Length: 240
Image (cartoon, rainbow, N blue to C red):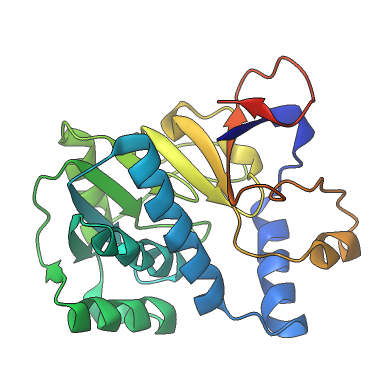
């Protein structure tokens, strides 16, 4: 896997990432379900490559982040035993509802309580965080942190403010984080992130050009990259 120097990759605030999402959907008609499918496929690939699990518990919230986590059903296609736990099953937005329906049709367990696994995937709260996590989401974060298994977070460890890098109470203590499209500024120095990886969700370069953000061709060779927290240079293409 290629490693990218942190200083070679622009980082976005949450407001900029919202603008990217809006441009994708409203201007280019690339729907959220397509982006989250790409996120889930990348998440599964990283899970296999980095952790080689035989069993996975996915903790999924009701929004887009949960939709990406549930798309990690690709892990089941590759022989993993997958269980999903929804923090708010009665409040699923269209994308996670669609992905949960696929899981059910595949016979993948959607449980009311999490159980131990080789790997925990955190897809509870994305960049929509407002204040400290609460309710079932907070309980699931605490449960995940208490497990011996590594935690792979999608886009951000749940409970972390992606602009300020401030961790709420509670916040996931991730072993690794797969952030999407571009890094968010709050991830770069937060210890809760663990190893930081970057996944392609098919944002066309046109979107960034219109926003005045210069972005190198990050995904020309691979849809997954590792971001080096202590870059020796600004050169792309180092070996992980």
